[in-house]
Image (cartoon, rainbow, N blue to C red; front, side):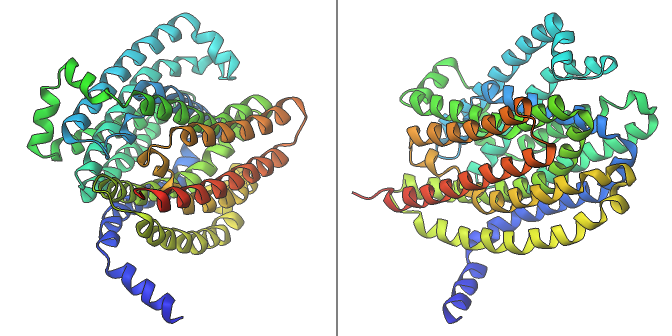
Length: 432
């Protein structure tokens, strides 16, 4: 108990906690806005609307990996000039992929809508994909550059702007439209929230960063990528697999069980997975910035990882038990009677979210230490596990409940494997 009290006191007084608090306070307020608005949103938008929105976000996330090459993960460890070049490259790539996606929607939009089982009257929502890609890349780039600069309070405020802006748009515009015309409101609001947050972060960056962004030349981008191409390729491939592992289930659920179950899953993600991932990523941003700096200076960051792990596992154990006791028994009361069937989905995803929350802040460790093979190998294992569960659902006749249980078991096992691996990386980094 003496050691536990000493460790807790050291953690509370450590500058690390102050930076985490700056990010988490903004993120917590943002998520409180989203959660408090959820009972209104679930009465305004149907499970089908939530399902369409979730499918659009899944498509944006999967394509967005190659629209940005996930260069945002390379920005915190980079020199400021190279970081600015990566930001410019991310924005250029997103515009190029947006144009390509618009051409694909023009030629194959109806076929794509049929494949993912969008209702025929809603296939026009696919035209929002290019806008989502550009908005997502702009936000990710500005956020990564702000993290590199250590401007954590600004990043926290940007979370409030993003979630608050999109929620306000959903409520105002959704209430003004008839139920049959609301299917595009959520994707549009999501894009506007991303753009508003990106603009805020850009306006708050120091002049030296903005000046470098204005004068980035193609040769500057080439110099930034020189010697980094193998790592950039590994990150892009690994993150592609990561996004597929995260987003494939929603497509499988839509195809195998219908858009209503996709809506249940989308709501569960919104009230369980999304808040936990955002808070964990906020803690991960501080860890990434500190660990990258220590790595550049030749110091071991294993003590940093231990302090962060102490915090994340403690928060996970307390927070998700409380969430399960409050939300699951009251689904119909809180969200409306038509959402009562989502109770099981929320309950099982709480387990997924708890383990993911405790380990997600450290998943950038392999990128920081340059472990290219592990970056690709672990994400490949994640995809293989999700694909196996998906194949069993599509062709093996698994029930929806059994599919979710299998999916969460696979994810939990791989999260724990990753946490063990990153501890090894942290211990051996910078050792002679």
